Image 1 (cartoon, rainbow, N blue to C red):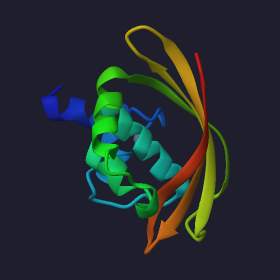
Image 2: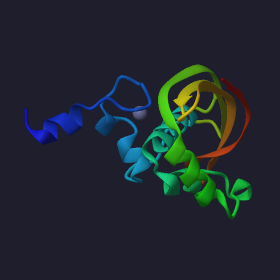
Image 3: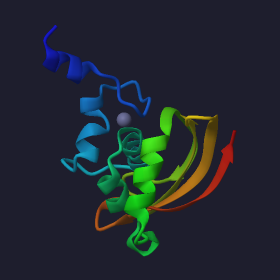
Image 4: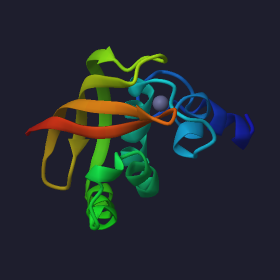
Length: 141
Ligand SMILES: [Zn+2]
């Protein structure tokens, strides 16, 4: 198998079961926008897993961005290893909706603990692109 084929066949970190190249990669790289709130949520999980900090900032609603986001995210990405994503439920967030909610669990490991981040995330569509607005977060270790 050539190296290119291996890249194409690599499973997407978001756990969709699809190859990375056909799932989150074009979204995280800005070649295509996420068609649904769930797709944006998955691509943000993948961006966390890969350390794509700019993408995480770009897909956060402007009013909820903070000056130190880049620094905080850089630390988080460095010390946290994301090991699995499970979508629990969603409400709206479809191709013809303007807002949506996705409830999910994401497993993680740090140097000294492992745990699960549980979140109900709110998204909205802004000029055709989905943005992460905010969420109710609970971390279980
Ligand atoms: Zn994906």
